[in-house]
Image (cartoon, rainbow, N blue to C red; front, side, top):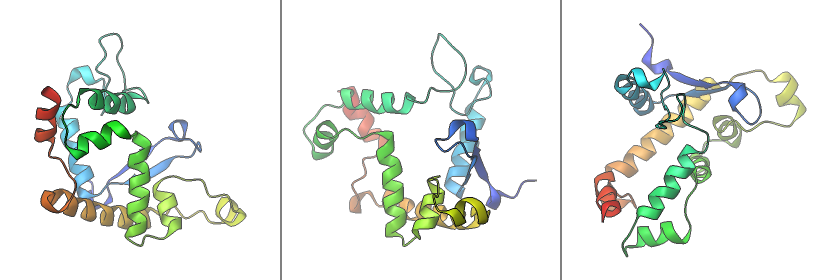
Length: 175
């Protein structure tokens, strides 16, 4: 049986900007989400965690699918509350989510070297490139577990945070 506390996702270098494999330690919530998605995937998923929903092809979602989904969601939002106005005035992108994680890790006092490793930023100094071969898996796991706790505190307290419950957002989209 696999050790749940060591769960990780590895993005192969063929799919990363810096062409290096990227190990992402999974906090318990992320692991549970992955397991839930795997349990829901059927034969049409083709073995992909995030399969395409296209009728024209099988395989994984395209790289721009999240950006398109966010754009489509914004087009379907109607109303006058501040969250909707903000979305329309400055539509978010998938990169904004990445920037938010980096910013929040900094707020949690995670050192820049570890934040960069969590985001798979390529180190440019000679020591990092040629001499430091440490994978930082434990440090990344600790950082991402701290981020998961912070995110849980935000989501767990909607009154104290600018979080819109999904059911509420869906109702706004349907109007």
